[in-house]
Length: 201
Image (cartoon, rainbow, N blue to C red; front, top):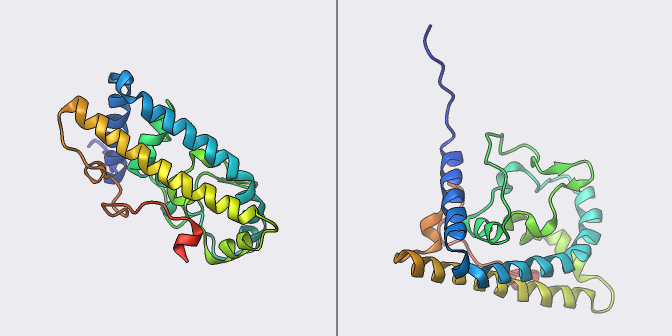
């Protein structure tokens, strides 16, 4: 009887390789990445602060929307996400085989099963026109404060990635760009910096 070989998902292999590479560098050179860890903790705290405002509007807009954005194709962690996750000392789920057009495997009957600060950046930085419109109508300074906070988080995110690259290059004597770590075929190299809703308009 011939042997049966399981088909290997090439993107899954690339994801696992990249995740291990980033995790190993954090574990092997902990002293060099102290600032990256501090920036990650600061980013997580900042995202938690605006989570309630976002949830207030997604609970209304997204539940009434027929076009579901939360599908598997958008649930992939980018390399920037992996840097952030491993800087926190956490792990991501392995990239398993799944139908990319199906509802996101993190999605439950009550919404996303992940803490907002630990969701893929493609989820945290995306606001459709309807959601953006709902947020903009928030009373008082609620939207302005949110937009200011999101802009600050954008710069904090870029500072984190730049710090990681600087330390990685220092400890490995390599000239690395974040594009060199790309694994996901539907993410183009040079993934754009996150934009606030006001910047997207």
